[in-house]
Structures are given as structure tokens and as C-alpha cells.
View 1: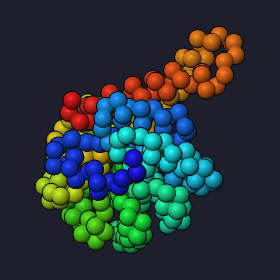
View 2: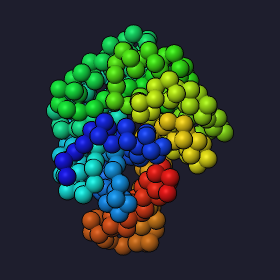
View 3: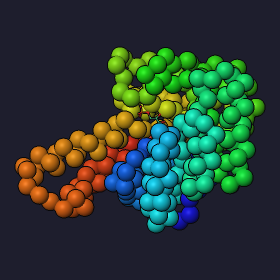
View 4: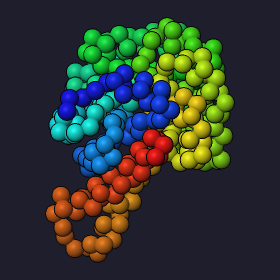
Length: 275
Ligand code: 13P
């Protein structure tokens, strides 16, 4: 089916207190794993491509494959640029056919973040695409800045993004110390913005009980990158061990890897949906 935007799947998820999984992919097999899981679970899904891939031809090259896979999928699929860092990446992703973009100005001064996110939201709108913004900052090898309720409201009112990423204690990548998730802050932001789908970045390794609480408190999109890519790599390693140095054609070699990826995504999708 045709691609959908965030605004076609997230508001309903927020009302029903469930979350849609957003999985980062960088190759065909990881993308296939996500879409197989969506079909098996009969649930919508979000595929994301990290902005780094748009610093070269990788992003647009991969887009061709992703669009074909998504159109073939029997469930609604959002194809989103993740952590867009500059307007050119927003333009490139939309030109390549993405149905959603995230602009991440969370490390910029507030007004600059508003200005560039608003550009991304308005520009995406001309394509019928959606836009996610971030206020507060989820650490990516640097310091997090927990989102305040006042900033969240002011940022949303100024940008009218379709989904708002908030910083409530998660980090990108695996945790190096015990996570302290501020589910209460999440609830306060959700109460102040009752219609707005909130996004949790840094989903990998976040304790399940915290995930449950934040979904209950307004999170309706959960981003997973590290643990999904790690699932792929571990599965490749396992298959290589099984081969014991013998040759196998790569497409056949990858079949069980795709199955492992799909199983991982399906388990998370069910959990995020409260099943
Ligand atoms: P993780 O790598 O921690 O899962 O974070 C993913 C993410 O937030 C992508 O935007």
C-alpha cells in the first residue's frame, strides 16, 4: 500500500495509549525484517534512515529499495528521515519519496531550533509529508537535557510538528549506567499537550517497565536503532559460525538473518501495542 505519514497513525495510537515502533535500517535485510514483522503482526510501522546516510548517496540509493518494499507491504508504513541535521537533508529525503522527516535542532538555541523545525514542517507539508521535532536533548555520546513542560508547549505552538520528541532520561545507544526515566515529566508534558503524539528516542535497552509507564503517560512512537542493528550483526555472526568457513550464496545466507530481525521487531511491536 502507499506510504502514510505520522499523522495518519500516531494520533490514534496516542488516544489508545499504545506506541508504534520506529526502527532504523541501513540495508535491505533490516528493512525486510521490519516489514515482515508488520505483516505478521498486522500493525503499522515506521522505518527510519539516519541522517548520516544522506551525507552521501547511501540515503537516496537505499530509498529506492525501501519505497519498493513499503509499497508491497500490506500494512501502513511511514518512511522517515531520522535526526535531519540540515535543510538540505530534509529536501533530499522528501525528494527521494520519504513520507516523513525529523528535524533535530535539539542542540541549537531555542529560537534557531524553532526556525529550522518550522521550515522542515512547512516544507514537508507541501509534499503531504509529516514532521517530527525535538525539544530538550536526548544524549548521543554527549549530555542529555531533560525537556521542560514550558519549552515543550512553546516549541509545539511555534512549530505545530506532527510528533514531538522529548528528553526524559533515555540515551541513544546502550546505557552505560542505570537508566533513570522520568515518567512523571512525560505525563506532565502529555497533560499540557493532550493531542500531540510524543516520541521516545533512545529506546534500546530501556527497561520494559519504564517503557510501559511512558506509553501510559503519552509516548506513542518509540525509536529503536542500536539493539535492532545489533540483532542483525549477532545473527550474521551466528550464521557465519554455522557455515564454519564454507561458501553459501549471500541471499540464502541472509534468509535466517532476516527471520531473526523480523522476530525481534515483532516482539517489540507487540509489547509497544500492549499485547
Ligand atoms: P537507540 O539506538 O538507543 O535505540 O536510539 C534510537 C533512536 O532514538 C533513533 O532516533
